[in-house]
Length: 282
Image 1 (cartoon, rainbow, N blue to C red):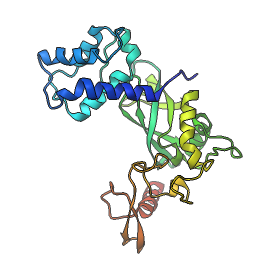
Image 2: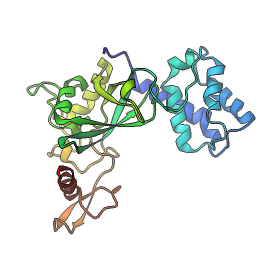
Image 3: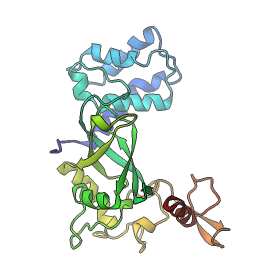
Image 4: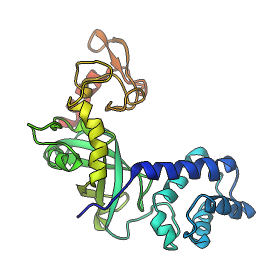
């Protein structure tokens, strides 16, 4: 399936404008009565004139009776921003419940972790849908090691002798691609097995891969591979995990090691990885 043009930067700008200008004033407000019309009018002020009011009103009405929290507002603004074509066509945007048709959905990889499925080694990719019917959902998809290698060139990696050689699926984190969602296999959550990428996605991906693949030096001057680095993408856009690890003593390996601050467990990242691999391999 050929990838269609897509601008993630433009989508994020539209989403942020909707959330900050149209929805933020209603945080902690219950969406009832005239509030539905008020929110609808404020959203209309941030959208192109070609969007019919009826589609926006029906989109807001789907939240009727709900207290607007920060998360609901963020997800709702994201769904509207990521489905502007549907809104313009007069189609209300509502939360995903089932996949009615095959769809090419742009996603951003938020996490990658080793996993076994039926004793087949591979990885679980946590992919955030940034547009389309399942927009704002986190789609978790298993890919075998062979499948990860197969899709790497589509995402922007080069041949082994090129500037962006593929070495590990951990380098998929924060990359963009189109997940080809299959309706007949999307039961309780969207499912995909094939991917595509536009030229703009590959270009944006390679700004991250340039450092991970050492086509450019690490901006912090570190020598270790990005997949082995303790710095998270809270401090570095080239990192492969969200939060920077902290160093402390690990009783399991009897040494000072790195811990994920978001993990409440007593094991360091290395011991946790070994324990998980042992458990999955049984």
